[in-house]
Image (cartoon, rainbow, N blue to C red; front, side, top):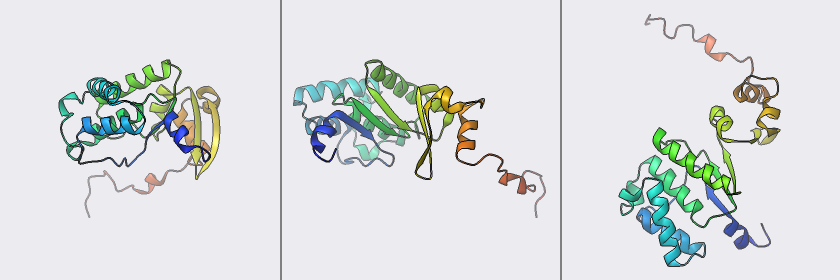
Length: 190
């Protein structure tokens, strides 16, 4: 990475949480710019951008400024920018957060198509059900340390769900702080 960062950047795509985009560009302009930054010709960047905008249901908003996009639209345009140059690996941080169910299903389909081609998706999520439904390899991190890695079955172990395994791995099992809120929902006001 440090010896040749340009070569590495050509092989990866990134969709970080708290995505910062060029908000005064339209979605179409943003993708064209991103493609050219990644070494694509103008025609190839435009063709891929058109396909991604269509598949991600952003074609109708392609000329709208990114500053006017909803959270879900920003996630989708960020994903399009991360995939535009067809990287070998894409890193996604909470890619489904703030995304409506229809868009989430579309994103899921795009990622499944991408991984079926032999590419790799590394994504982080706090939603264990989502991790269980999408991933075949898992790493559980807590306090900056990896607590477990392996296939879903290996990390889940004897637990019925990945959520249960996660809670034990991060030391949250048995905590019931909410029980102290015995006044909550009781209908009485004070």
